[in-house]
Length: 218
Image (cartoon, rainbow, N blue to C red; front, side, top):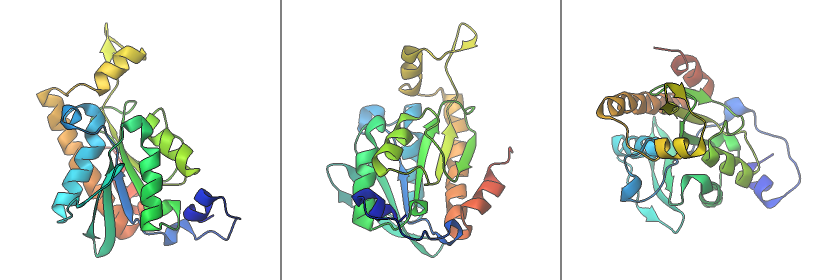
């Protein structure tokens, strides 16, 4: 079903094959404001910022719910956006972007986020699927009524307390909202570069090609 038609509750229609889809919108999710610029949670924003800068895309449109820039990558039109909401409420901004840009299919949207259950610095691309514990992705799925959009996940690792990985909500919140160490930031910066290369590949050659190339361990 067309993404726009799904959002307005229209009747079903023949779907365009996923391989025919071209990514038209990249959304990096993170928490807005200078206070949250450097924490692990904002690695999606780091990707959006560097991808836009590399291709001369300026975030020239500011609304209440997102920053948006439009340009071209690999010869194809591309919009890059950052919600101005907190991560856990990313979905509403994505819905506004889908409507503004008139996206036809979920496969035209790619979301970039942190992922706590991937080792720090690992980059993984998925064509579709659930939130995997990332509440921003879960909110986007809930608000757009589909999990068929591709996403790039960047590992930030799980906090270790007393020598063991912790699932305690307070430990997790402290971890994702705190700045990485200088050594870890170096690892994450390298992951950001790899994520950008994966996105550029997905735009130029398709998501499957990017998965085959960038989901392998280095």
